[in-house]
Image 1: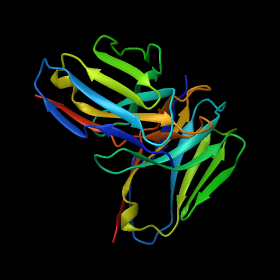
Image 2: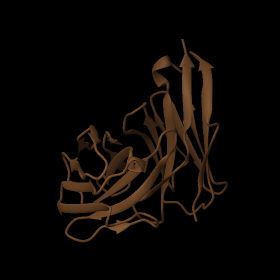
Image 3: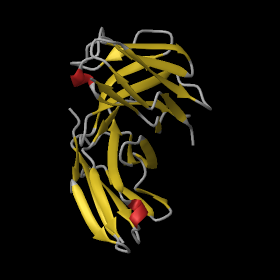
Length: 112
Length: 115
């Protein structure tokens, strides 16, 4: 059974710092991995989708990497801003379905 | 990107009543949609898969008679919480796969409070 874990659960950094969020999964046979952002009381915003054949994806200040063999993904945020404060979730599909298995999330606070 | 909407965004109901939540794909068709539940400070847990024109598939431990799902068209799925109780209070979020079926797009969520 696939399990997804995110470390750390919470992170507080000063504005301007570069930071890395970690996501690990137990079954390396994944089709893709998706990173989401969730603001308090809101839905999910898709940030990056990495296909199983890809090693990384970039969007602006965000870079996500994927290492299937080790069951890990990282989300790198460059030059963090207070507006980046949110909960970041990673998720992988359960088999070849659209069902997603989520990690517990990392709650990020960027202090001005 | 694809847009998914939910209605209502917030609802407060009395214990014992039923509440219907709508999930719509606004600019694309979705033969499948997914319903998740999120309790405070927890992650999302899949409740069921909504299939257009056929019965929904429920995850283990989710009562199908309590959480009625209807997917009557290619752009609309509804979740009805029947005989709601305070423990059903939660954040309910739906999602639909985009073109190609890889990326999931989520609605803004519905906050249900049962008093």
